[in-house]
Image (cartoon, rainbow, N blue to C red; front, side, top):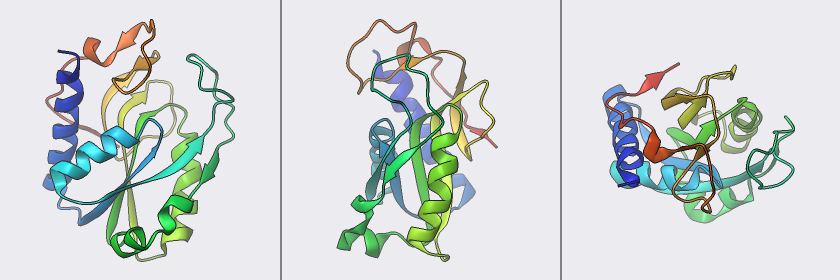
Length: 172
């Protein structure tokens, strides 16, 4: 089944968070790709999940070269439930860390937005082999475009089903 590797990856990430005893209070998924993994981790850790919008590709078409310029919208974090839950340590979750530009742009902005008492940890399902930014936790190192179950069907060379079912997490 296609979701086996993905579902196991979410379990491995949640277990890694538990083992580190990080006082996680919430996840923030980076839309669009980080929403599903953030929700999955949140369900396993029994914590709320929120989202921010960020984009660094000029279009949503596959194989589109990232511009390096990240635009973002933190307004989804201004709701009353988000303000109450976003203390302690918050996981910032994305599907893939390519160049690292999205994390590198969002981390300081989220730090300012959430305040100095909130610690931020980064989590990605995949890290690009050529990237210079290492998330705190990730599962797969990849060197090609990866198709995830929540994306529209396409003829990608690599799908999550092609990746090995993970047994451990990778760390920075």
